[in-house]
Image (cartoon, rainbow, N blue to C red):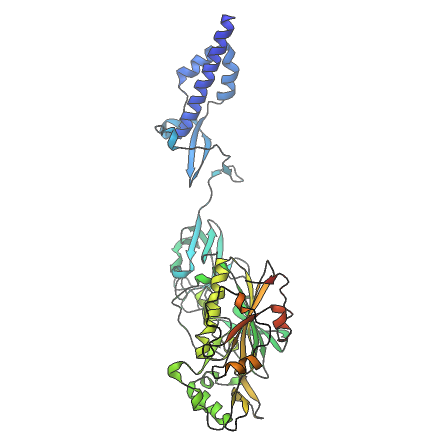
Length: 488
């Protein structure tokens, strides 16, 4: 009995000692069991099996520390002395034994690092078009407007006029780390990969029709078979009016690139060769409208108070993060005559409020922005007369001044939606608006994320409706619905 007790006691002591050495050594980053202890343990016949299990390969253990987690992997015995470090206090280290990541060749690897490029402040000028490798998709960004590329992964960059440092138009860039990318064996800082000139954007018909027009896609033509689409337009060529523009908004959209210069609007091959830019000048618009109102139009214009017709974006410049995308919004098929006091007033508040809410709520939405009807002003005889910027040879109006601007917003996951509508005429009375400009049941009082003065006629009287209610009146839109309810 005494001998049994002694053996049991020694076994327990050995187990405690073994646990101590394993734990204490692991917390230090390396475990190396002293040879004299091993010899003592092996001298006891009753512990030989335990010793063989624990130390049959006499391995040393090295801690790999990455970020906040650690992994312990075996290393060869001859490396142990070199790698040995003094143990840290147990209370300050929390090691966890995890299975190391191993590649297909059996090499031990830690988690790869990432390349992160912040769109606001991190892009070169002029920048390339960034593409997901082998696709037509413009490279995505996260909810904070950051491009993320895993180490060893790639994206493509396109400069149709070639790069400043590379004699080519299309390159594949591999993430090294941080903001460094490798192209053809040379590592560059991301901002070094710059175009000689801004990539060109194009607008081309798709061959499809839409309700009241033809479909046009706007984007970047990399090759005859590769087109990176940014947004699409339903354009009526006969009346030279855009019915709507469709584009996406996602949570990162409120982190758009700043400091991107506005450029001159372009016709993009539409408008039958007209000098549309001249038609929008204050002198020409006054002359055109004055002629059709009977010589009494000057009272309706006051440039000092922003009371004139501007080129009003539908898909807003700030709705797009990349600078080259912002430039691609400067097409006349993406604009309509909009009173500037409304453009800079409640309509700007709607655009800003939707972007901010999409970002904070992490929404992914479809936006359909368009115009409806033709606004009027009384002529010299008091007759309400529709306003246009141009007329054809038969005196039919072209490029109409819209009665209403609207933006339909539908969240893709929940299928909730809402429509924001603004009155494009600062010369109306409140009674005139309520009589002829409210086309659906107003639910704007339930909206809390738009900072507007919505009943201010000068800033553009504005309201909101359910999608189905609005769509029943504005039939030029696709058959949109929001079965999930209101997007509030």
